[in-house]
Amino acid sequence: MRNQVFVQEHHLLEAVRRNVINEHQMQEVLSISRAMGQSANTPDLSWLTVVQSVVIAGIALGPTIPALERLHRGNAAEVVVYSLVAMTGLLAAAHFIRRFGLGKAPAGIAAAGAAMWAWGLGAGLVGTLVYPDAFRNVYDYSSYGTTDYAMRQAHVQLAYLGGDVTMVLAAIAIGLASKIPATAMAAGIGLVAGIVNFTEWFAKTNRGHVDKDEATLMLIGTTVVVLAAAFGVQRASRATRFDPAFWLHSVGIFPLGVAGIIMIDREAGMALPWAVAAALVIAAGVYFDRKSYIVAGAAALLFYLPFGAAEARAGDMGVGMAFSFSALLVAVAVLIVRKVYVTRAAQGSNDLEQTVWS
Image 1 (cartoon, rainbow, N blue to C red):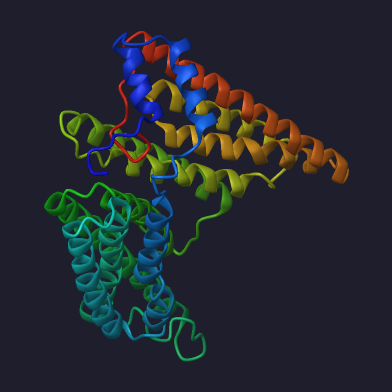
Image 2: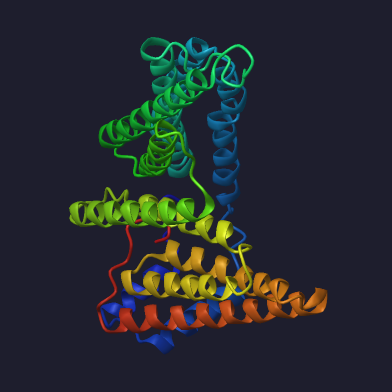
């Protein structure tokens, strides 16, 4: 069993690239593989990795809600203790999972979870030591004047910003030390949250707030910043198998989707430009060879056309037809993308991603 090798689609793509087989032969091999199904002597244990990943994700992120609720209520020192315990336990779990070969995905989730818990450590320390009033009676209007309330709100945002910076630094440190690319996901989330919290802090310091239009521009700018960082990391790690760029790209596309959700119901006709934006994301995924863009753009495209039908008061039938049409478009797009990748492989110009996708 240890010496058995199972042919996967990316193996065949590489064979096409090296002119070992042609595209037609690749399709024939895939057809035979599908017809034969999985050998009875080869147990499918992929479900085990999925279960392990779900369990680790629940352990890593499940306690965050009650912990952060305590932080909001002024118990920042307790959150610091919780965060230290959680970080230590998750780092130990990641180490043992890798040591005993229990799965790449669960180890990555545990390490990324440890980096994300660093947010509570940073925010709690800033809220306890630097701005002791940051999380105390934040919503109490009766005991304090407007100026004091606004100042505490600014202190809350600075404490959050401290948590964001701590998360980014912890993710970088854990990632470099453990060589687990998934920690870049935590770094990306910290960067996104840092930009958002800095904007909120700046607005509240000047006695203002961030409206929907400003939030949309901020989120689009955040996408640009994170994707620029992802391309920089991708270029820096091109010669190694340590490829955290995939996770940064995946996180970087998320703020653009939130901006679309914010603007979709602002006025009639907004669904069309965001559907075009989703199509451009898919095109960028093909051009830059980032499959996460293709998945994100296809998912967005699947819903923006029904949103447009709802805006046009098309009724339930019209919305259902729009959803079916968008699903058809996504299916066609998938076929086109597959054809592009096969053609690249045949021409020897397909640089397969060193990620979970390949």
